[in-house]
Image (tube, rainbow over all chains, first blue to last red; front, side, top):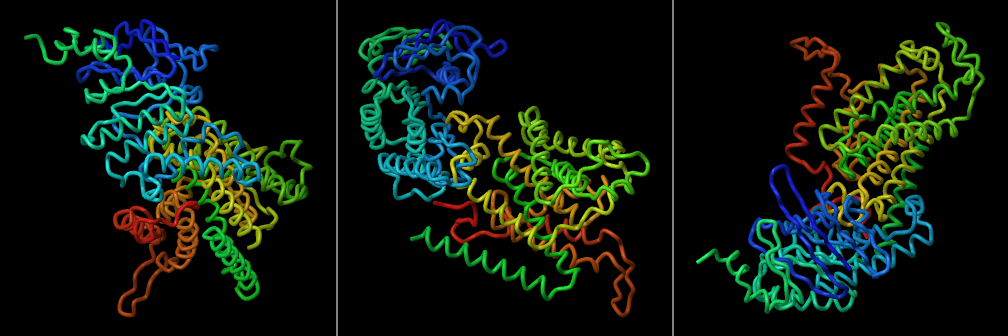
Length: 256
Length: 339
C-alpha cells in the first residue's frame, strides 16, 4: 500500500528525518511513535505533500497494481489519489457548519463542472443530494448529527477531532493518516475512539497509519509500530516487541 | 418545507423589486432614477468583490482596474461609428474597431469576458501571494491598467476619455444584472465549488489536504469576480456616457471595499443592502461638501467632507460590528444559502 524508502527531510541544518524506511500493507493499522520532536508529524507532512522530501521515495499503490511516487506531488493531488489525513493541531473550517465541513470533504470527487453547479442542472442536483446523504451518514457515524448546523469551532475538543476524521472519510481515502487522534481525550473518549477507528477501518476498507502518544491506544490497535527518535528509526515491530525493546525504553525514559 | 418557503420569500422579494423599479421609473425624477441605477451597479460590484475578498479570502484591491476594462470595452464597442470619429481627433482609432457597433448585451458580455480574461492572466501568477502582498500586487495592476489606458491613444483615446457612449443603462439593465449576480453567487456558494472557496478562506492547508486545488479554485473565484466587475464597469460607462482613465482610481476600489466591509465579508444579503445604503448616502450626504448655513455661523464647504464622514462610519462599523451590519441573533448569519 505505502512504501517509504530512505526518506530524508532536512530544514536548513536541522535533520527532521534521517533515512526513514517503512512499509504499510493493505488493511493494516500501523502506529508511529516517538518522543516529542522526533519527526513524526514531519513524516506525515512529507507523505501528504506539505513538504517535498530532501531525498528518498514514497510509493503509494492503493490496489497493488499501479504505483504512484508521491514525492513532489501537491497535497491536493495526493488527496485525490486516496491519501487523506487529520491534523495534530485541529484544522477544521471553523466558521463553517459541521455539515459543511464534512460536505467539503466530498468536493474532490465531484464530477460536475462549476457552471452546472450554478445552473443547478439535474445531474448536479442529483450528485449533490447523494453527497449530502453521505455527509449526513458520516455525521451520524461519529454521533454529530444533532450538531450539524453548529459552527465547527464551537464544538468541544473531542468532537472536533472526530469531525476531522469524518471530513477525511468524506474524501473516500484508501489510506488514512491520523495525527494524534486521541490527544486531549479522557479515558472514556479514548475507549470510544479505539472502537470507532476499528469500525471505520472495517466499513470503509481502510488502511490506517497513526501517530499517537497514548500508549494504550497504540498498543491495542496497531499491528505494527515504528519508533522514531531524533528523526531516526530506532525500532519496528509488533506491540509486544516494541514494549520490550531496550532502545525504545531508553528513548522514552532516558538512560538509567 | 423549509426549501419551499424560502423559494416563496425569494419570489416575493423578486416581485417587489420589479414592482419597485416599475414605480420608480414612473414617478421619480431623473436624478433619483440615476441613484437607483447606481445602486444596482454597486450591488453587482459589491458582490463581485465580496466573492473574491469575503468568500475566498483573497485580499484583492484590483477592482477599479477590471471595471475600467469593462467600461472601455462597452464604450468602444457600442459607440456609433460617427461618434468614434469625433472622439478620436488626436489620433484615429485602430482600424479594426473603427467600424464596430455592437448591441448592449453582447458588449456587456464582452466586457465581462475580457475583464475575466485579464483576471486569469494577472491572477495566475499573482494569486500565489497571500494577504497584503496580494493586495499590493492587485492594486499595482489596477494602476497599470489606468496608466496604460491613459497612454494608448488610438485604442482608448488616452486622457481625453470617451464621450457620447450611448446611454443604454436603465433600471432594468442595472438591476437585472444585479439580480443575475445575486442569483449566480448564491447558487455558486450553495454548490460544492462555493464551499471549496469558503474552505480556502478558512484554512488553506486543510483545504489542500481535502483535495482542493488552491490554484484552480482561486483563479476560478477571481475570474468570476472580475467578470462581474467588468460587466458593472460596462453598465457604469453606459450610464454616465462619459468615461476617462482617472475615474478608475484607487478611491473607486475603496468605495466598493466600504460596501463589502459594511455588508459583512462573505455575506450576500448584507452586501446588497449596504450597497444600496452607501450609494444613497453618498448622494444624501452631498450637503456636507457644500457650505452649511447654521443661522448664526456660516461653515465653509469642504469638498470631500462626506468621504471623511464615511471613513468615520467605516471605522465605527469595523469596531462595533466586525462581522457586518447585518447579523442575526444566535450567531446565525444572513449569509450564503444554507441547506
